[in-house]
Image 1: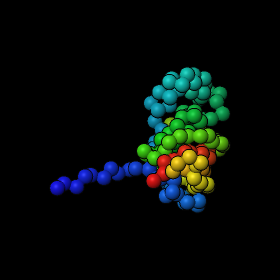
Image 2: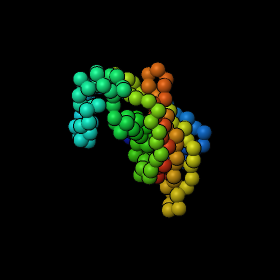
Image 3: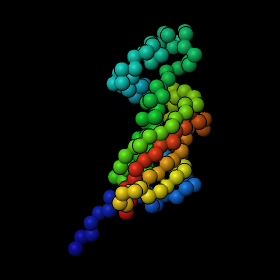
Image 4: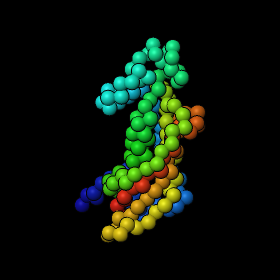
Length: 154
């Protein structure tokens, strides 16, 4: 009899998380094609993202900056792949503060700190609130957000 393979990478059930737990994702480098594709997909065609001459001569931010919405999307991808694969049921909301720019070539990672864990009123599901701190390769905090998620239970 052959033993069935166990799938790796499954996220945490809400019962596996306790207040004060901390996790850190792997990093991801923001590429020029990431910025270009996101700006075009989202229709964020303001000159800061589409005009190199404007950035060189007039912009307050030098280099090729990423929209904050792209940084958030990348951070969510890193966080969800690390903690909520198959167990995350719904994103219920967040607060967010952007602390600094993320430029083309920067590498971001996310530190996740569990702030709140409680059973939801229906069944075995639970609510988990975290503080997600996004940092660049120099350890500078570029974004902090506190998502509330509905998570699957055991």
